[in-house]
Structure formats: C-alpha cells, structure tokens
Image 1 (cartoon, rainbow, N blue to C red):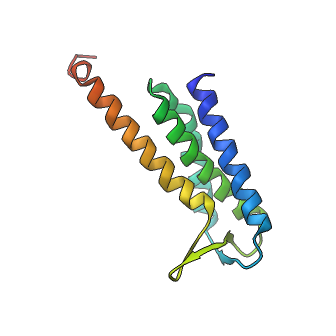
Image 2: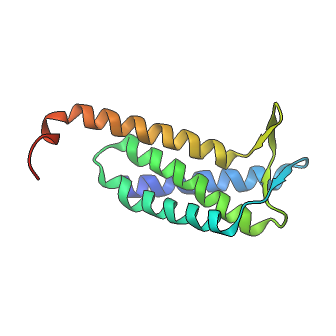
Image 3: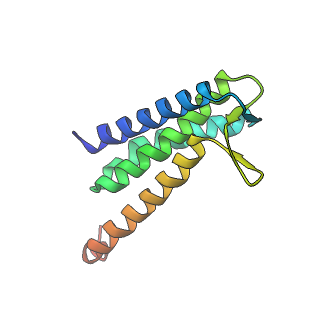
Amino acid sequence: MSRHATACVAALAVVAATLVQDALSRDVVRHARPVAVLVLGGLVAAALLVLAPRVPSWSVAVGAGIAAGGAIATLVTGAAWSGGVPDPIGRGGVAFNLADVAIAAGDALLLAGALVHAWANRARLRQPA
C-alpha cells in the first residue's frame, strides 16, 4: 500500500471511530466552532493528505493521516450535530472528543517522523537543490 493510501486509511479510521463515539455518547458537552474554523480544518486536512505522504517516511504519512482524520471528523461532526461539536470526554473541567486526541497524536507522530527522517538524511539536506 502506498503512503498516500496509508494516510487516507488512517484518516478514514479516525473519522469512523469519532463518529461512532459521538453518536453513542449520551452525556456530552457541545462546543460551538465557527464555520471558518471548520473549513480551515478541512483545508489543512486536505493539504496533509496530499503533501505529507510525499516525504518518504511511513511515520509522517500515518501521522498526517491521523491528524487529517481528526480535522475531517471535527468538520463532519460540526456540520452534522446542531448545537456544536460533541465533546463526550471530560476530565478536570476540560471537555474534548476523539478527534481532538487524534489531531494532537497525529501531529506528534508527524513531527517526530519528520525530525527522524531529517536526521537520517541530514547529509542530503545540505546538497543544493
């Protein structure tokens, strides 16, 4: 499977898991997010799915897919649920959902993968383009 396909599968898995969690949760806090934020998240997700898998690193592709899936899930739930995005996970006065966790985890994996890839190929980074 290609890195692009891997990123897309990871994104779809996050979207599906988030939608199932949000649909099955009974006691949730709803967080209104402006339409501009949802659209921007969708654009960033598209950019992640198109650009990040070009880096020859599987961890970058998977991280981008997970983060993009979180952003897409937020866009979908923001459009599907009236009253705001459901945040069924609450800890210590903070409410969030699986999409928020996926965005943070995907970004961490993406960044770590990019740093490892850059370190492993640091000699090539100094070559003229």
